[in-house]
Image 1: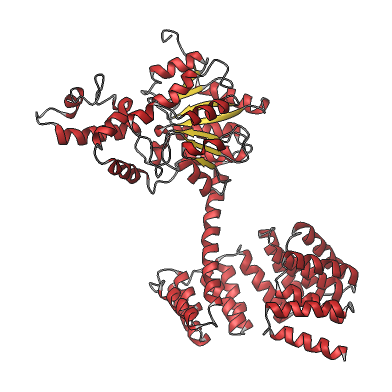
Image 2 (image 1 turned 90 degrees about the vertical axis):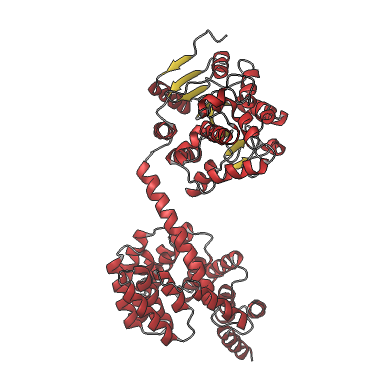
Length: 567
């Protein structure tokens, strides 16, 4: 069979064909078969590299004749014949067994050393983009690394189903709700299959699962040498017609498909194509398959995700610090530990945590000032200091100056603009200036419900009820599950428009979303007690509020007024 020539296409022809199939055959999917060559640009050695390193180790241990490693390899008896230093990849499992004979765990440790801490290359990023944005969501790999899953995670794409052991093959099926990564030689941490018997034989469960899969998925082979008998044995055993469409085998110059791969391609009428590399191929394929493909947009989105993750981390730490302000001695000790953990003062955030750890506002202000002297261009530290001046020190004029400094340093910081607008609204009662600021915040962060709520609240305070109602209705449609928006709209309907039946409806909706929110319970109970004249319902809600926080001063004051009204 090997004398028959395998069809070879140009890369442009292959990309054009894949794009045509993607556009016109919506029941056809692509499955990417990846080998160690795909991970090379992620600084993970290929199977050939590892095999040659291990031959070098064995030569150092065993050669006593002074022969070179190339000469010694030909006579080392690792296999019966045919092994050369250049062909090491073909005998990877036998070399692994000899190199780590008697201490297989050290072999796994060697693999971990080469794979731990490696980041997905551009090719994996683009593969993740294809998986996320198209219907082509299957990867079958002989690799032990986690680069596919890592790439999907890094770019906030849907997490894949990773089947890293033959005991889980029951989860591999053609109809998938999420991406699939089938690791047929197991995962790096699940006793990876590296021995000759395991690499040469595919477990029966995998044979059945992959046969069903390839009936619906066209295999695109990238970076796979085809030197193991397991996957190649399965592909060779499949009948003509068991694979959907033409199998495509990508290879690099100097690394043509092996004889067994040629036999598989001829049997299934597949094609081979020379590519410049994994990253380059994935770039060109993504440009063909991904709608509105934009490499710059991927970069910007990834950068934005990193910033948001860091910001979320800092906010959670800040919130934890603030929640420990008035607590037990154990909580105060935790607060000190958090502050001490960043005493190096190498970042603006270290100063922020140290300031937040202070129970004395005077000491906190001193720390903020010291931090700003070291980081005078930090909009984040200026922003946090502005909040401190406004909410803790109760110095709105100083806070306004600090917000102005923030906006000089970061004019598109929507959070700073929002908080500055709120201060202008509540302290200065300058409705027009506050509205203009909120409009800027909404333009920069159109998905921020707080900005919508503040905008409507300012309009309501300005007695522009018609515009306020329009904004509230838009906000309720845009954020139907936001209890704060629903509660604010309910307050507007009851206090400004006196539309009590509609207000009651939105108070209930807010409470359904956040049933344990003291704010929601208290506002609704006051509405029932003082406006809607439902004293029995109000009493039940007041008691519910006391179960949430029996010491809340606003609750006590409202309930006392309710009881007095009932006398």
